[in-house]
Image (cartoon, rainbow, N blue to C red; front, top):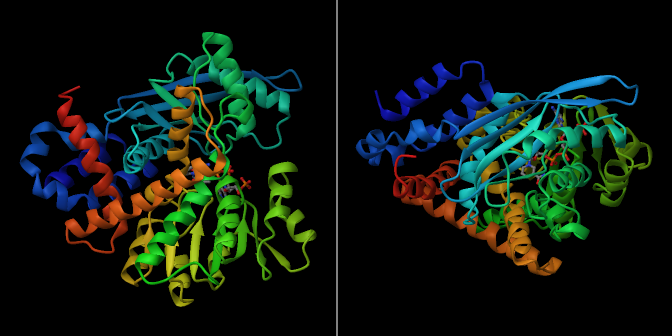
Length: 444
Ligand code: NDP
């Protein structure tokens, strides 16, 4: 049995109850076959694949807090510190009722390769809780965040582990967590990223993931003889990534016609009105029905359906496993030319393979959405030197990073005879750097 198959079998046995983690491990290891086969003896002796699929540590803890009725609530908190071969652990905190250890492990595992791809010195980690911020008052959010950080503070630090936002964790939550960390530790340091601008945040961090997604997509199109101008784009989600992806796509001359949330989706034939979308989602924290009610050109539909709309480019920006095989078939049938993942693992394995086999350019999330973590690393740099860079400076560094990521993964794919397979390219380019650092640092 090949080394890759052996490790997939081992990981499957050890983590049978974690389907998302297994999905991510299989996807990565399958695409690393050419590299692993070329170095099989050495990697096997060093147990590189066993080590890279086992987190350095997994922390789980109780998060008790009091709701507005005086009732004590208990949630479960997680931080998985996966691999710090190339820098301090870095990765977001997800607050969503679906969160469990397997989901945090899948995200932390992906983060290792994503962070490596940025060329910045950051290792892989992820955390969160099964707490649902929806419908909670500000006071309840603060009570949860303070309790969560009271425990998490023991395990993080500016040179150790620097969490950030993710689904359900925006500027408000990061602010409350930062305040509690400072209160407990008495240190003013860049321990979290995604902070407000008045206390160490970076300009352009809010926009970074969505903008970065478009910078990479644009480069991928350019290298394949196309561009964004006049393209019809379907986007899913209507959170941080989706909003700024929509904004940048429209700045680049495309027309974005859909957005969605967990209850429904909108088709807007005139193109999404970003200002209205921001008002509904960022200010009112309301449902998309409010967008549709305020916009005559928009239709609201319950449930899923974004990928049924004819488009040139599809950008899934909501959550994992939201673009299925049947959606991929529909996209191909409708003439879609490119899919780039704004969310983490939004496309299932079968859907990805179908798209690639049918000539659709496919940029995986670990490359395409790396702009968020890259800009978080730029926030860390600014905090370390106690300076703030201008929006233009950060944005131009972000553009450079995303273009560079695309060329790195393109080159890695070509090096192993997989030209145009950007999934393999991203995994290989991210993996090679981490493995080199792991080998140099010995068995630790
Ligand atoms: P937000 O919480 O701001 O938005 C998430 C969006 O996805 C919302 O529109 C939400 O709808 C929708 N959504 C969430 N869960 C589901 C579900 N189960 N089914 C359907 N829709 C769902 O998160 P972000 O925009 O920050 O993150 C989106 C994705 O991008 C995630 O996969 C995240 O890991 C990834 N990502 C984010 C980065 C960042 O910088 N923010 C960086 C890199 C990756 P509703 O409001 O109804 O819940």
